Image: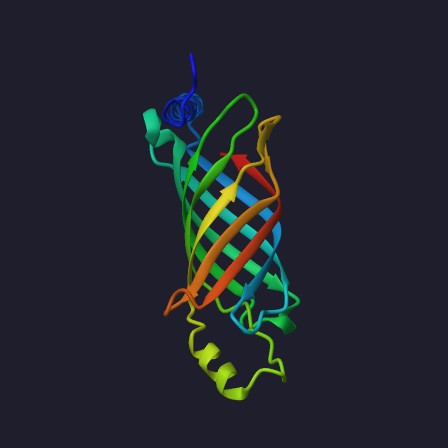
Length: 189
């Protein structure tokens, strides 16, 4: 049997559905992690900062697709503080988990409030350009969270590296948020 792109998509969807169906319910999880954050605009970028994250998530249900869907939120603290406008941010997140043996990849969306990153004051960029870019640095962000390397090890979920790509606003679209997760540990309650 020849596998056409259409059949390949159907097979991949069936495999993902089967792995979601096998995912065990995780009623409550507490997570702690380390990572980094940087903002990139058209003419400037921020100094990278390190992040410490503490978060909580809860499964949407105990059966079917709802047990693979989690909702949660948390706080991140950035350091060194001298590179930030305000070193603390808060976020909410919705994620979809899949499971194949010990491998448990995850993807989702995240919304948050942050004033961590400050774009550099590059002297080669005209002051009117800097003023226009600074006006587009709203306190909110929205992004897509990807955690492809998550593994269940002795009752803990170990994850890393992770990636969150998003935009800052309002207005959204002028500045890109790039957040890398180095290591995260999740404990079920």
